[in-house]
Length: 124
Ligand code: SF4
Ligand code: SF4
Image 1 (cartoon, rainbow, N blue to C red):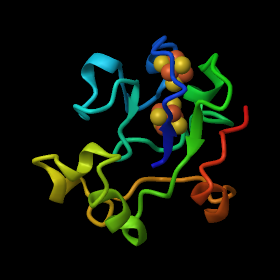
Image 2 (cartoon, rainbow, N blue to C red):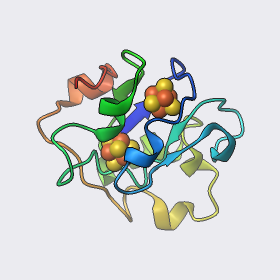
Image 3 (cartoon, protein in one colour):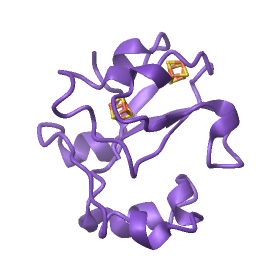
Image 4 (cartoon, rainbow, N blue to C red):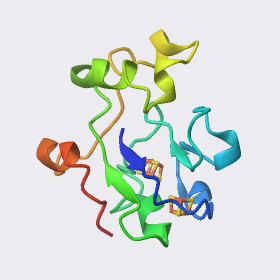
């Protein structure tokens, strides 16, 4: 990813229009059938690098600790994204083209792997 929206989300949609790369899908548009909340598409999220000092979705979110850090969307974490039901990437028809090893995304290197593994809330 990326960042991840957790089940603390109240589906207010405040984050959706703030995303510079249209990576956020509202509840009704989520590519995950089993997910009742707003969803970040990890294959599109660039962690707002080059667009904002902090992830714009988290800055707009009214729900404390709702948006958390996830792993970089890079080849190193290909299996993590492709084999998990947490992401629609695992069921996408374009899986091969969108996978992290084929289409890696930018990420913030000041956010440590430990912070990402712990899914620490994005501080704004
Ligand atoms: S971190 Fe930025 S690019 Fe990623 S979903 Fe949030 S607003 Fe979009
Ligand atoms: S702004 Fe926060 S609470 Fe509102 S839809 Fe986005 S993640 Fe959910």
